Image (cartoon, rainbow, N blue to C red; front, side, top):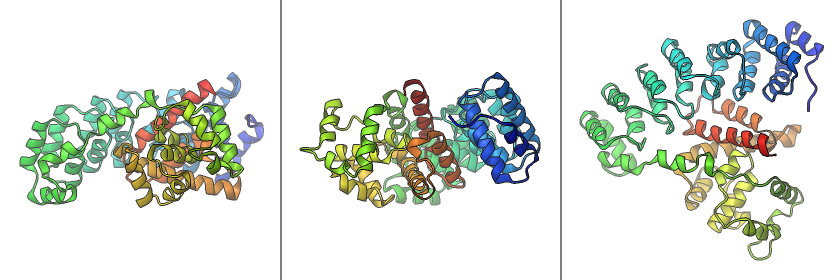
Length: 397
């Protein structure tokens, strides 16, 4: 356990002008607060520090508070709402990931904010309710609605879908997001067909190599994502993780995975049939090695070749992903997550920082930070899987 809150920490946060040092201290304090390492007196002091910093501190400090508290299961409401209504850089982690915000909170924020980035952050939340989705559609902003339609876990009423068709049939990005959503009634697809321009129809038909009316049938994101929801996401046992890490560290992993004589192969075969370990779950655990092992077992490709293929995050990884028949809607998120894991591994080698597999909260922070300004399909859903693993780890490990 790291050093607890000290008087030096308080003085540095309230008096120092060095933002980097203040961020380091607030990372320590907010991490300990989130993980419930403080006693009652320390917890109260930490909360008073948060309140003070939310009023007077630099953006980087407030952003650090938000990133560390976004996965907390308790935050005083005044602090939570202060973070949620701060500028975009600060509020985004809370708006997109905090489970403490209610539907009423989200609807109020979406309806009163003039910030498109704020509304997009809400649109990416996992399992958005119908009422919040309606509020997002009512913003009548194409970027917000496109983001909402790309969130396969969001519930949209038929009335909202009709409004989208009426308002955005001339916006190509929204039309594409709508027809590829995979869960809109056929009659609404026909309604859209009548309204969309010939230019947009032609572009989409060329892109998907089929008629506009049939594009929607190519997609079933809701069902595919549901199949990878948390009930079926299996964790490797802690002992097995330690064994794999040790074999990798000692350069013995490839030999241990020999399909005929490898000791690790025998262990895995005894545990369950090939293919039952879910590779996406391994990436959610920040463990690229376990992902590669799973992919080797599912596809029959040698582990050494798997390692080479996954260094090519576009062609090689995509071919491997398709061969393993993993859910297409999650590919962008998995590819991006591997990029972040690689980045954290490089920083570990250079500076001794923690790897993704060793610090899942930091892994989530990096996923959010690196995704800023990028459109990564189903990233919020993927991060929800990471968070579920954190919850399970806290209960089982």
